[in-house]
Image 1 (spheres, rainbow, N blue to C red):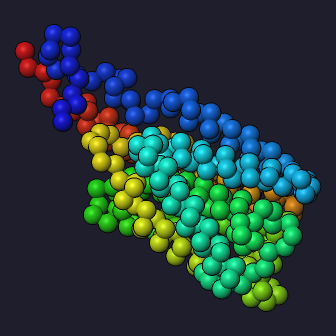
Image 2: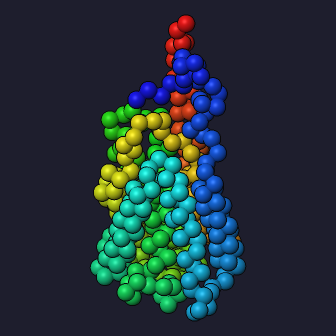
Image 3: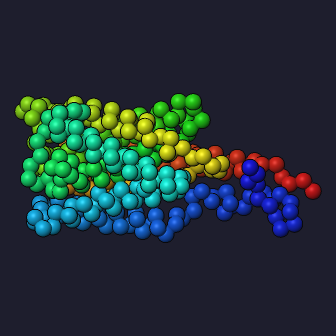
Length: 303
């Protein structure tokens, strides 16, 4: 497929600056609105949780707003690269995977460890699966995967690039849970761990929880990767929306941890988030420079 620019008289011409930078132009309005809505939802959720506000029995549905908006924003970010039907199918599969994992954890303590939900957990599916947590999982997994893809962009020509993206995405999801866990188990009391002894683990959560996160996310992504492969020729997407979604999820948890006095969790979360965003920026900048150089090096049109 020939993608070189053609002039009005039919001759090839050097690419313009706008054409060289076309993969980083402002994104469509829909994705902008989705990201803005999620940002507002994250601010509202962080403010409410930092203040210790818990919705009443008739307002539990409001706890779904931030996770659902995050899921929509992550899907909009993925839609830059993939057809809408791929994004919808992929998200549905990830949601079912997440619900099944949460149900399995409730029934058998696998793969995260033994924990019991309190009455504050909110809406449950079949009395076993926290609805908000299932949507949160989808948002975290999608945003982690796309952030890992961007961070590892300098190595995308490696034969093992796909495996490294899956592994990195699984670790990024576990990093997010490091900030989520103190809020859920300590600040809000959504669940209680049965395995961790006093002083062990991370804010009462056993370390097996994060091993379970890494393995679970890696399996989910390995199964759903066929829906993430771009089958049309063209330049890779370098849009920053997915890292923005991942950062917003983490920053929401970091702010609440700091407000509730969990300074270690806030500091660790902030440091890891800053490091990941720096790697994502490095990947974006290096790939953008490489693609601009490749386009600029094209042979000049023949007279």
